[in-house]
Length: 112
Length: 110
Image (cartoon, rainbow over all chains, first blue to last red; front, side, top):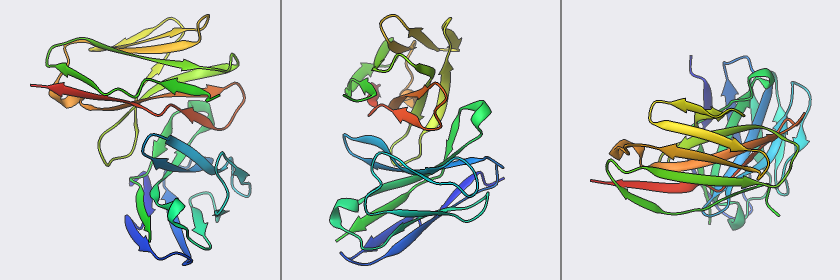
């Protein structure tokens, strides 16, 4: 079992470029989440998907879009990257009845 | 006001010491509480859940004080391997999203 996987692990973009961060899980969990983590700010929720076919905004959704492709996959897209989006991005999953969240290894994104 | 507040530290303690972290939460509708551990450049991982009656797992003890709206984590006999950032997490009743504190950084010194 891979758990939660994220690709890529590292990425450098120029301002204005676009990219999609991929997340996949083999835990059969209903809920999936995207967070960003910045020094001194902790983990901030960007978007989440309570179940296949639904997505909701979190605390910091501006500049991002998401797609819940199926139960396993939840992608995060930056349409026009900005330096303020330089961060570490974590995907997470959760089976509601158990409450615990499981995280992927993260994607380190730098926007120049 | 943030949903969850933690002292960022850093806490630098010698091996064998006892150290305690507190975390306060603002919403009285908070239902579930957790401590996560995050090693440098790694993802957060669940350390332990926090139950109303308090709970212990080896050298780690977690407690909840609903009246004062805080949770605590006590680490006894600190080991070098305990060096990490500890995040407290709160879930509101019926909510699907979790609220994370900014984390408390612990360094255990030989």
